[in-house]
Image (cartoon, rainbow over all chains, first blue to last red; front, side, top):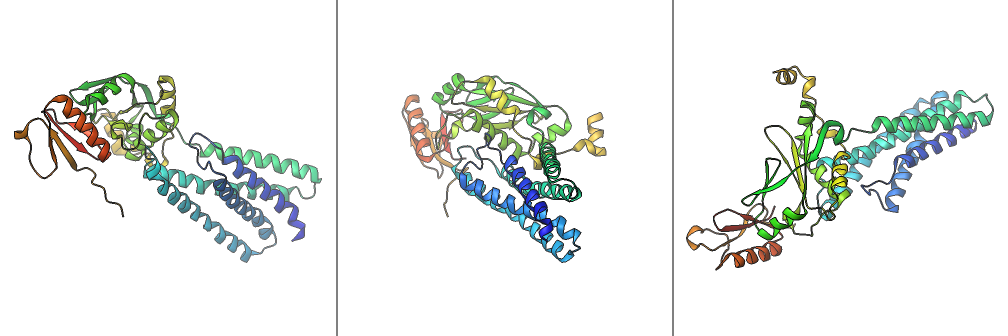
Length: 304
Length: 63
């Protein structure tokens, strides 16, 4: 087994760095704490080690070892549960809730990234083994190149669409029909206090999110997707609200006729461009995606 | 286990005694300014939202 030590070390380090690369810190600020990083990097390292060891055990025809390694890989399902329960525990502490669909999406991504680390390590181990009769320098160079390509490629493939890919976003106008807040012709909510209405008139911003096709319309109709938009936009732009001020909760409502969404919120700073930019960058949730156009019935409705 | 009365009418505030009744707490007020003030205070106490029913009756609902 000592023959393979070089391969194993090279592959597991590559997998580890692939995991590190995917653990970018972005606006979601999650996981933003060092402990969270430690947890994910360690689990990623275990995954990378599994992927690295797989190749030598296959070459030595140690199929028992291979079966055990595959069994160990199934443990990574647990990562999803950990992420889900952490985020669910944190949900009541959010001013604007993420919603269960978004939590599920995040948890799934964290699980998947470990598999990507395993893949990277596996592919690097294969590369290193194929080049075992070459010079060590060549072996290291090509392996690291493969690692970078694999990690980058998998990362691009994993990147889902964002709202701007499926919908047109434009500013909406805010008006009041008695106490009813109306944005772009859609009734959003009943605002009782005139002082609150005044704040809405002066400070609120609103947007209309118009789906580009029937698929997008069905996707945007998902309640989890609507909540994710409200959460992400308020995370990026900042909300003018405090605990218990329910009137200022950012709201997403759907127009039943056209399927367009309207979003209205009172931002902490008046920045219209940032607001629109924030909406366009909200990810489309994997669990929200619907494709009615792939069905005969869906196409019949679209054609008529 | 924490209980919270969400999606129920927590309080009714009105200037018109003849228009309201029932089991929710009812607060009678004299004028529009008082109506708005009491509604705001109650909303902050309950951490709820104020809704205007359009006939001089405000309700507090926690969503």
